[in-house]
Structure formats: C-alpha cells, structure tokens
Amino acid sequence: MTTTAAATKKFASQADLEEKKVTFSQISEHAWAYTAEGDPNTGIVIGDDAVLVADTQATPVMAADVIRRIREVTDKPIKYVVLTHYHAVRVLGASAYGAEHILASQDTRDLIVERGEYDKASEIGRFPRLFQNVESVPAGLTWPTMTFTGKMTLWLGKLEVQLLQLGRGHTKGDTVVWLPGEQALLSGDLVEFGATPYAGDAYFKDWPQTLDNLLALSPKVVVPGRGAALTTPEQVAQGVGETRGFIADLYNNVQKGVAAGKGLHAVYQDTVAALRPRYGHWVIFDHCMPFDVTRCYDEVTQYPDPRIWTAERDVEMWKTLEGQ
Image 1 (tube, rainbow, N blue to C red):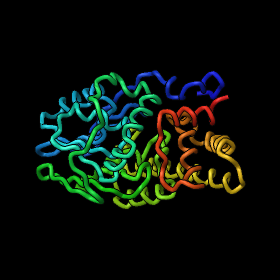
Image 2 (image 1 turned 90 degrees about the vertical axis):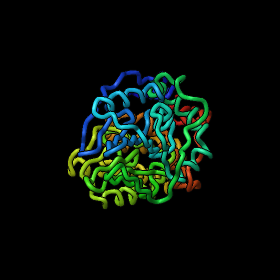
Image 3 (image 1 turned 90 degrees about the horizontal axis):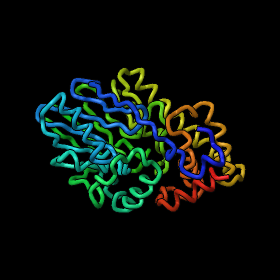
Image 4 (image 1 turned 60 degrees about the vertical axis):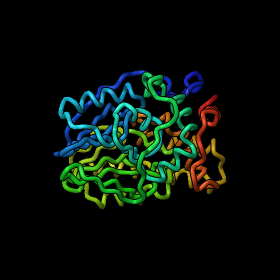
C-alpha cells in the first residue's frame, strides 16, 4: 500500500478488506495447519483420543470454520485449546471450541491481567476484517484454566505433546507446541513466513536467541503464526531465518538512529526506508512498522519492557509517524 496523506488517516489495516483463501493441510502424522494467506494461523494436533487447537482465531464465528474442517477429518473431542500468547486476534475465538482446558504460560496470563482489555480494544480498532462477527465474542476476556512455566507435557493417548517456553520474543509469554515424536512445531508468532512480524510487545534483544533455541529442537515442519505452513527442514530454516533477519535488521537500524541522536520520527522514516526493499512486499508491512519501530525505539532508549498499547495510544502513534 502506498503511504499518502489520504491513506494514513486510518490504520493501513483498515483498508485491508480482501478475504483470504483458507488452506487446511496435514503437515505430519498428527499435526495440521489452518492458514489463510498471511492472516493469523491456527495449528491443530489430532491425538489418539483428543484434539488440541493452538491459537483460536479472533471470534467464535471464525473459529467455527476451523471446527468444521477438523470435523471433516476426525470426530474426536476438542479437549485442549492452547494460547501461544495473549493477543486478542489469537484468543477471542476460544469459547467456540468447548474445550475442557485452556492452556497458557503463566507469563501470558499475567499479560492478560495487566493489559488484556486494552489489547482487545486496540486490536479490534486496528484490524476490523480480522474480527468477523465480533459481536459473537462473549463479554470479558479469554482466561486460561491452567498455566505452566517453562514446560508442560500433555498425553493425547500415546501421543506426547510438549508446551514449551523457549524465551521471550514476540511477547514475554510465548509458547510453542512441540511434537517430539514427529518433530512438528506450532510456533505462534515467534515465526512468520512472508508476513511482517508484529513486534509491538516484543523483546528485540531476546528474540534472535529464542529462535536459536527453537531451531535447536530440529523441527522438520512448522505452523508459523502467519504465512504458509513450513513443510520441509529447508522451509523451516528459511522461515526462521527470515524472521530472525527482520528482527535483527530493524533493531540494528533503530540502534544506529538512536546513537546518532535522532528522534523517533526520523528513526522511523530511516528504518522503513532501509527495510522496505527487502521486506516491503511482506503481508502487513505498512501496518506493523509504526508499532515495531516504536517498541524497538522504546527498548533501545528507556523501556526494557513493552508499554501497554491502548486504542488512544495507537491512534496518537499512527498520526505521529504516518500522518501528514
């Protein structure tokens, strides 16, 4: 999207109205990927006696399409929902599944307590298309019924499923779902493929190491947070490498601007210009960059932990960086 005075009165994403084609595909013996051309993905694990869903879609109406596709391949009960992190677009569809357990890291629950309501309001304002039938979302927030720190193991019959915190990256609470027996991974937004990482709640200094920890598992297939499923080790290396490259390039450009004494607006302009040739064709590049650069500037200067995004702060930031 071209950035013009007319186009910047609203978030770049508010002009994004095109429906995306959904793909539902099996990527290993027990893992499936629900992807939609750069929209938020859902990962599914079909075990011996139950189904696990990681990342729920943004509303119960949207989750119903995931359930419909699961029911085309199995009638096993959907027993577990995993929240890989706390963002509204990932969790507000949870009620549709009727799961016995909603699982998340304790760090993710802490973020829901601290900023869940603010995030819900800001995300719906930023991305209206991604919250189809938002009125179907129950009042209140999506709360985990069980939390863990570091590692939790589930057994879906004889199928071992591990929930792992590999480090901070996209948020401080990031969780991956790991099937060690078939080296299949559901990464949440720690990994994107052909889609711009949203880094408004990120830890830029930690994220590359967290990705190294992810690669140390030697995954053969990955359901990324956005983009097509990664179905070979070569694609996995590409997806992780490109995500890592984006985070490093953005951080290095912001760090360079701050060292030169530049303010946020100048650093933003310089960083977008530097990254656009390599990453500008990625999904939601124009939407994410103001949030990403603002968070990175904060981290480099005075805020080691992400500040809360409110709907009001979103608009103020957007006008400052993209407005004319």
